[in-house]
Length: 434
Image: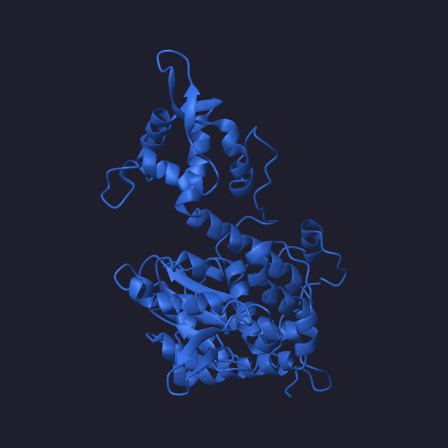
């Protein structure tokens, strides 16, 4: 086992710092929280036997040349048993996962697999990635040769890189990093596999050596989480690794979880039904009840909403489709009496929406009930700068309500601690990463 000092065990915080420095050396990420998230996710791949959930890492970009493939290169060189592909059949992936300590699946150009033209033909692969987020969710197939059922494991950590959003069921199980093209003046070091690969591999070895000695401890870990439900399941392995490392990493991990989850929620906006609930709230305004025709008119009048052209033909939201979408929340239209000249007509009562609004759109301020406050960060969400300094960890500790007394800033790594990260510093370049 390698160590980060001549006498002691591996220094987890120093190794994570080396991983952080390697990422920012070759890739420009949009925020400090995004860098921390990728570093922690990569580290977590080396402790897969300890996790109940295998978080996905989604690296998405709006256009080409935003660095997503380069970031995947860095992850490939430092994660556990990388299995890289740009296309794979579900059968091949099933067999590659195997049992015990599976490889880390890395899928580049994922937009060509799950895009509009190919999405329907790859539902099996999407189902595999969804099921593999949680342990003990195997696929079951009938083996004609042996005339018996075959149970195939699906549990494995996976990273997907592509242009645009991944399927929402995958992103809901993922740490989502939204890449962007570098601005003039933002520089990174050129990456060459032959020259820089061995240094990155060395970081992967250090991560494996450190975490392999703590699998039992990590399996039993129950870290305090700033998130709930599936988001907490996804981020728990990363936070557990950060807690094991100590230093400033426990707070940085939780800040990253809040920042990236809030960003993903703001970007995706939820399903069509969630969007409809929110827009219905705005359409009701001060009314206690509203005719269906008036509700449809108000929904369609918003130029930024999808309702004016909703549906496969683009004809717009109809009363029947409105009813179908709202019925999932046990909201139904009924005959109501309205002031003249409407009189008696089909419509919706505000009281029927209240429960759904409180459950599914709690971040919107409303007089209907006490809404949970939106996620907030101790620091504004800012682009990452290499010279950026961290906030005082004790103040962050208080902000996130953690009962922890050892959140002191990790000192800068010495040349010995960073040995093997990338070799001698290479000149920076303004050439854009792929």
